[in-house]
Every structure is written in C-alpha cells, then in structure tokens.
Length: 157
Image (cartoon, one colour):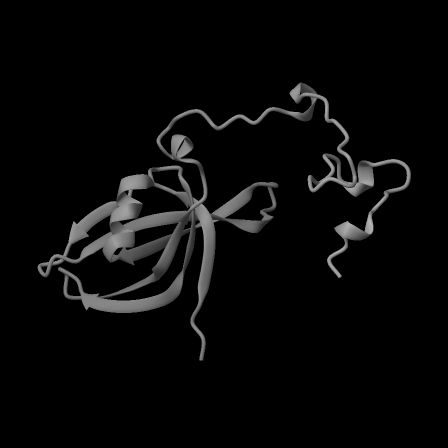
C-alpha cells in the first residue's frame, strides 16, 4: 500500500505553532494549491489543503514561513474524527508533512523585495578561454562557432 502526497503552494495565513503537554512542537497551516485547469470563466481555481508538521520542522515552519510564502510539502494523507461540541461526529482530512521545503528566498518570505538577478544585457562581455587550459569555456557548446580543439591531456581515458 502507498500513501504519499507531494504539494507545492502558498500559505493562506501564518502557521500556528503549539506544543503538546509533553513539549512536542506541532505547526498547522493551510496550503493553497492551484488546479491544473481553468473553470468556465477562464479562472484558475485552488484547493485549500490543511497541513500538520511535527517537532523541529514545525518550529522551522513557524519561524520562516508567513502568509503568501511558497512551500513544498512531502507527506501522507491522514483522516481522523472526533465528537464536536454539538455531539456530532466531525471528520478531518489533513496532510501530515514529513518535510517542508521553503521555496523562496528568506527576504521574499519575510515580505522583502524579490531577489533581482542581472539580465544578460547587463553582464560583462564573455571572454573565450584557452581550450587547452583546465578552465571550461565560458560559452555553452551551442553558442560557440567553429571547431573545438581538445588535447590528449584533456581526455579522461
């Protein structure tokens, strides 16, 4: 049998961190995961999936993720039930995360600006390197023009 879930989405609110009477950390959060298709109005819908993570990963989630943070969750589906205040049976289905990956830089998760990377137009011009040196060429093979010379010393066999 197999029970495995892998999700990527954004948190809908800040994680809630609590501790059991035995002192074990547990964090709960809801992940909004986009569906792969659009509805009849052309809008992409999302599923809101409740997640639970335990121990040190729970503390990390509470410390480093915020509402809107993108996260990857690897875990399993769990269903539990209890008797509500009105005496009715309440069923809860949630993802018990075995690992949570933070998929954005820390500055983005904390509300800072996105990391900016220079585009190729602002990069300094690339120099060709000597093919017989130990330094790899600065351009991929697809961008190079002309023959490539390789000495016998460069061959691994």
